[in-house]
Image (cartoon, rainbow, N blue to C red; front, side):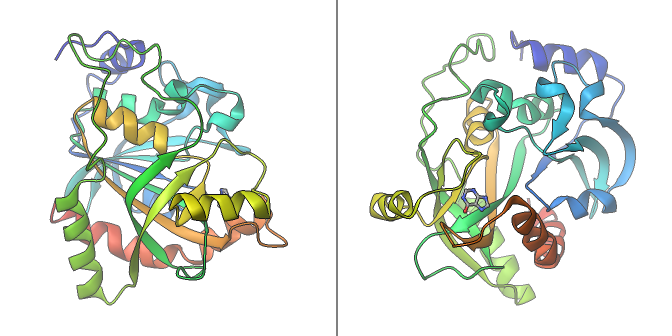
Length: 269
Ligand code: HPA
């Protein structure tokens, strides 16, 4: 497919000697442990890759792409992601997915840390994203030429692939890992929500709230990729004492289930 997207074009050239991948993994705050388990044949800091927005810094850490095999599957793992709250557009925030497209990925697995809304979800638990509500007022398809001849008016029903969701639920069941289901609301951030905002989000039908993921998912759908999304609930939304450090620590503490779940899912994709 011919692309007119600069990140895809240039990544395609720069990464031409890297063996293509089947699956891209985008890791949320504190959830990058799995990137260390990839049998790596190519790795680079984000900053060394074409068109990397925001200088490759992600919440004070250098983002890193790790390409290789995980549980027998060719993967491109993005340790760290790009956020709109860094002053970037949704199109820029979708950069990992655009690089993944250049590497040939047909499936994207996005993970994130999220605040839990309502009493149904438990802190530390994993949630399969069934759908999202984009409250950021931006889309990665604004101003994006996309694949040549492609259609920016992308349908978003079943954006989170039903078959992949069924696989994830089955595998979680087999491993005895709790996996709830929920709707993810994306906000701009970087501030956390007010209690009134969380009540409003609950009324809108959201189960989780976070500051990422949605630009990547929209871009992935525009590029014809299948999407699986998993949130880790790191805190109660609008909880009294949320801090970024606590969210990172909660992500790291609860990352064990994700580290067991994702490689097991890969074998079924
Ligand atoms: N709100 C928004 N984003 C988040 C939260 C939250 O409570 N927790 C982790 N990411």
